Image 1: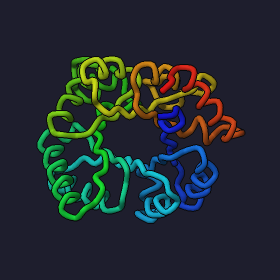
Image 2: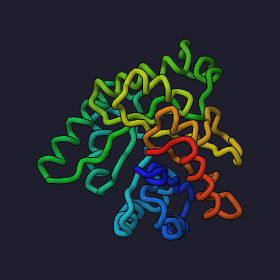
Image 3: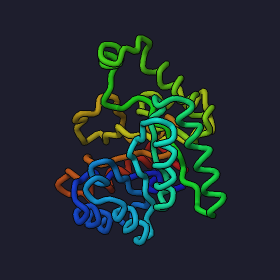
Length: 241
């Protein structure tokens, strides 16, 4: 897989037209686009449908977190939209994840639908140790929490996890075949903003990320096309596949 095929470009914008304009500008270089809560709330399923019509793959990052029956039904609907990957929160628990996997397998086999990759979100990149302890009441460190949640995801039958770059080495050591999607990627020339656990693309590639999610460093750059070129060069410096 080429380095650029590992990039998921986050369409972190509010409007449908703006999102499609971005996807159109980058369609020759990016295969996977992330649709998150803001864009999906404003645009609905049509944003996924249009990206599919453009021949692109969609990472639907809505981080489902609810009772098992609600999440499993929501994931079924997402699968029928034809998304490539989607997320739920591992903190929803083993039963929530397991029921969702079972329903997804049943529906996709029965109705001959391509099964999307199901990823478990571990600990958000905006959370640091202080927040984990003082606000969430989890006393062990982030690395142990991520390892524990990744283990639950595997036990439930998920395809992979979403985890910050800081946990990549640990996850790859313990779970060699796990699909890992990594946000919090900040090229050497960009700012961190509200992400607290970040890493450059070349470091993330070296440490074992399968896909990296990037949005603001590209889209907020004065020359987004040049920013993407610089990002790909950083990835190639750290990884050749």
